[in-house]
Every structure is written in C-alpha cells, then in structure tokens.
Length: 150
Image (cartoon, rainbow, N blue to C red; front, side):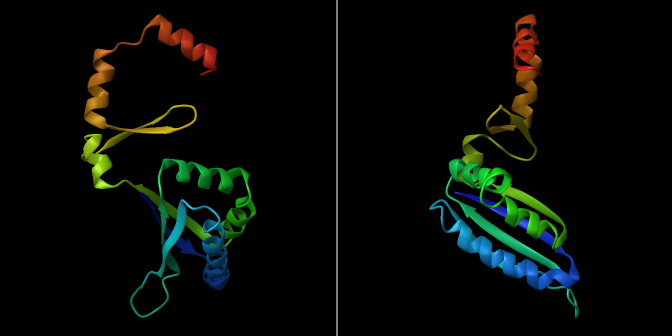
C-alpha cells in the first residue's frame, strides 16, 4: 500500500467549496477498488482558522497510483482538479512508501527518483551514485538517447 499525504493551503473565502470538492473526491475515488480517501483533517492553528487541510489518500499499489494520476491529468477528475486548484493557494504532497518496500530497496535517507518513460523508479541515492561512477556514459547510450529524442 502507498499513502498520498497532502497539505493544502486554502483560499479562506473558498474553504467550504474546497470541503465540498473533497466530498466529491471521496465518492470518485470509490469508483476504483485501489483508491480511498482515508482522512480529511482541518489543521488547527491557535485560536483562529488556519485555512489548511491535510488529506490522506490510500492507494493499493503502484497501478492504483497510475490510474489515479491518469484520471486527474487526462480523465474524469480533470475538471475536479481545476475546481480544487481555484480553492487553494498551493498544495504540498508526499507519496509515502511502506517500510517493507523501503527495506527491500535499501532506502534510507535521500533517494534518487528516476523517470523511465512510463513510470518512476525510486532508488537508494548512494547506490545510484556508485552505479553511475562505475558505469560510464558510452556512445551507445548517447545513440539511444538520440533515438528517444532526449
């Protein structure tokens, strides 16, 4: 299971619209077996409103994350995303990995996030740097990048 943790800074006058949009988000997520809104929390701030919310979305696996990203960027949730963006100043998100996966990948501390055309690869930063040092860039690598248009 993966967990998407987001902190939203809302536009004060649009706080109720933001909440209503997340009610719709919860229903939309339920259409996919692999995604669920687990928590929606208002961030407490002293004695007045903070206009911040924390959301936690559970994702069964990487495939569920991919399906959700496609729905938000190109599918049925694209309009929803546009509406929510108008209700907030910004959002900070983190995709949290379970300890079991982190241990298997020997991930401790900093990581290297690599784009591989259709997916992201998360690697132990030290091991990745060592691999880069040991495997020098070759003319064949350059040719492959040229063929990909990179």
